[in-house]
Amino acid sequence: MITKEQLKIKPGKLFIDGKWVDSVSSKTFSTINPATEEVITTVAEGDKGDINLAVVAARKAFEDGPWRKTDARDRGKILLKIMELVEKNKEELARLETLDNGKPISETTAADLPLIVDCLLYYAGWPDKIHGETIPVRGEFLNYTIREPVGVVGQIIPWNFPLLMAVWKIAPAIACGNTMVLKPAEQTPLTALRFGEICQEAGLPDGVLNIVPGYGPTAGAALAEHMDVDKIAFTGEYITGRLIMKAASRNLKRVSLELGGKSPNIVFADSDMDSAVNGAMTGIFFNQGEVCCAGSRLFLEKSIHDEFIDKLSNKASSLRVGNPEDSSTQMGAQVSKEQFDKILGYIDSGKQEGAKLVTGGERFGDKGYFIRPTIFDEVNNNMKIAREEIFGPVVSTITFDDINEVTRQSNLSIYGLAAAVWTKDIKKAHKLARDLKAGTIWINTYNTFDAGSPFGGFKQSGFGRELGIHSLELYTQIKSVWINLGT
Ligand code: NAI
Ligand code: MG
Image (cartoon, rainbow, N blue to C red; front, side, top):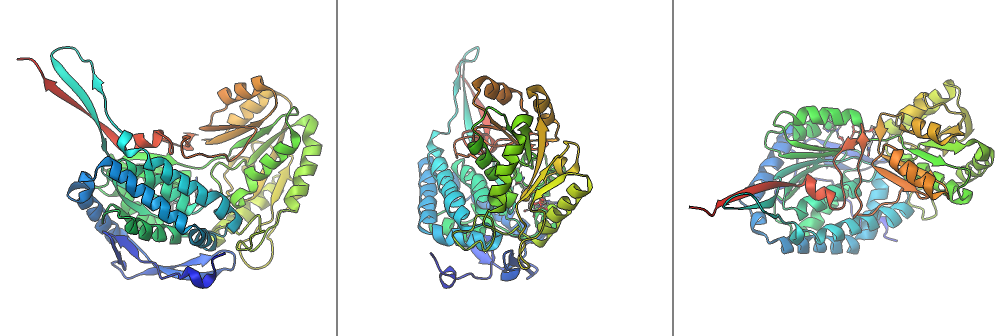
């Protein structure tokens, strides 16, 4: 494993127009290791002025730089080169992500990095396959379409999968020929900055990707409202999503939002129970529950309830929580003190509302933002812990005995990001896949992803689909060209 000495963490600078610079204000902020509560390093704090410089650089790179004239296939080559460099440095990146975010090294190694590499590989294959069409219009005309980049794109990302969320947005934007200003989350800016160095080394021209760490209400808001940004892509809380839409309305920039969830994980009596128990574990405890599509509402059919809860609580209470850098650790620290307090607040609320605490429900250890895997039983779908996104290792169990009732209750949420169903009955599975209002449906699996398969929400979980061919829609616009062939 890569050692602490090999990590060589520098104070982070802003990455604007291919240069590493201090912020206009010279202000910095600290980024913390949530497992130890210690400062890792300081990072330049971007604000309105820095965002403006980054947008100017991105505009110049889009209109006048070599990017516009870079052949599509060569954009693919750059993405492949970025992918190679990420692979070459994957241990360092995994380690850095674990330090900054608190998630276990086993997960950054087995999930984040392979998904990042795959996403780059997938979009590396796209640039020379993005094309328009010729349309058989009436009359003596030739009509064809061109699929063009949108222009300067602002990307605001969260802290739960810091580099993966950056790459979900950067890879398709590069594939389509846009230029970008990325604002990483203030809690986890380090891997995005290291990725900026990698892109530079891979030959991405100056100004194509600008990275400006800073806070949401300052740097984030400045990017969302900037008059010369053509599109904004956001992942985060739905309340922030509303602010982004409002800010974006100033110049009617295109918006795509990937927001939260309160996803139902539905287990029928006719499922393979051990797989479903494992699925419930992954659904809520993967990444400390800091997953937008976490299976945070666990619906259990009445006849299997007792046995299921027994098995689940045994597994949950023996999950290895602790030092994220230890390769045997299964659950790490929550990202920040704020998040840690918020989760403990929800645990209190669950107790007060009369849910039954089966296991967990408290802090783990006395240093670092660790919370024990927590299971609430006898939850009612109207309780706060069943309605609001907790974004932590806390599952709310609700019992049902009828397929129509569980469908209705599952859909009773402002969110609609994902849903899972565990059953051996193919008819039931397809029926629920049809009837559940969510952007992703998992049957007998949970948290399964692929760069080729679209991801995004129904209802207040957002709109626009990332990944796959669908992300190309977000980063291109269509031009219709008419040529008079008559006299
Ligand atoms: P957030 O939505 O405030 O932050 C996400 C990103 O948006 C960060 O980069 C932040 O700096 C930026 N941001 C914040 N306010 C902004 C504004 N006014 N204008 C522009 N950008 C802004 O999420 P936060 O506060 O970190 O977490 C709060 C809760 O949100 C979590 O407890 C969780 O429930 C949810 N969340 C959901 C995520 C998801 O993937 N759907 C990711 C992160 C948080
Ligand atoms: Mg916030």
